[in-house]
Length: 387
Length: 125
Image 1: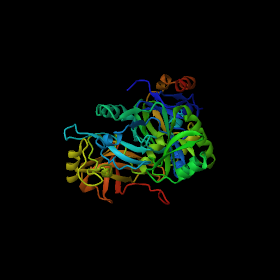
Image 2 (image 1 turned 135 degrees about the vertical axis):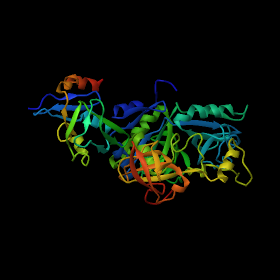
Image 3 (image 1 turned 90 degrees about the vertical axis):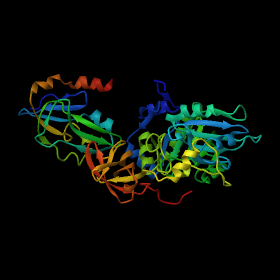
Image 4 (image 1 turned 45 degrees about the vertical axis):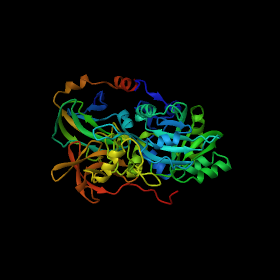
């Protein structure tokens, strides 16, 4: 990792608009503009927009692109439809138990090239981009697949909240607006936003309806400002990584490096849906780490991921010990005040006998015992219909 | 008459009061840097504190920070209303947002702290 933080195409905008920039995963990123709580609540009530250009964006193309990814990812790629996105893990079969989780990622099948060549896009975590790219490159076949890291030449903007889709649609022509508003969850399309070419997906990391938009770096600020101008009068706010973290925590979404780590058992942390052991037509798939995952699925995990609601507004933080009956039974993986609930919540890995909803546990917060209760995840579920 | 307000590099302020006590709080800069305050813990009256050691804790949505004692001495009064009204810190950090009053062991200890202009220079750098 370089010592000078990387800058997204929107970094200058953040600096000149009150963004408090911090070094995050090697990038200079805004943690907040006004207040984490204000930005969080704006996203729940109206909309929030987030610069997530630090996320790694990879283009994988070629006649063999789909078969190649099918042979590498925990999630089936062979039957992804054009315009569909899937959440997957990136694994190797190294490590003491024959499984190392390098990252979690979103893989999207874009429209085939005019000559029919498959095109896929992968979004990976900033902190894992280098090693994921290195791993994928080491597995590239001699021909038939190209892998290009498009992170630097593009920007990614997440627009999230009840007004997010309508706000972006205002900036598109009628056809594109219709296509975007008609996208189902985990569906993607290309569109022009204020005349600029964009890859738009109905995905996000906040628990709200919303979009993630990838545009060329050169027009990132134009698109960003247009979204802000369109949504600002209705309550849309620019939001930093602080609110992104509290929003995803309330939504019960795991974060790599916290709930999900290299040695995780995906079935123990609620990520079984990211693992397809078998192909669409039955029969085992082949991908690195599959044998270990077969064993893990058959075994009962010692510790599982739970939600904790704390009695106090004092937040349990990552690393806080969870205790019961005088002994340690788990560890907090993420915790914060939950602005939408006005109470402190946490996600934790706890021994299975203590994981039932309603179980009273104690979290050690800076050596002070704080009572908490196991509650269902997510902590927050948005009202209204799903797309 | 209250004396000149001094600052610790860790962003606490201390003001000598008539009768030899010293009032302690955290600076406007610190309050603005923390934002989204959710919790504060202050020591009970009678606590002995040492300069540079933790006097209490203040928690924002993002993180927990220690509040350090700018001078050594005994806590003789605590602003009990403050933890329940953390917005006071944003409105009036040098007045109603005071945290504790300390009876300093050695009043000359204050001379080693930053004056207003030196502190302003510190937070602007």
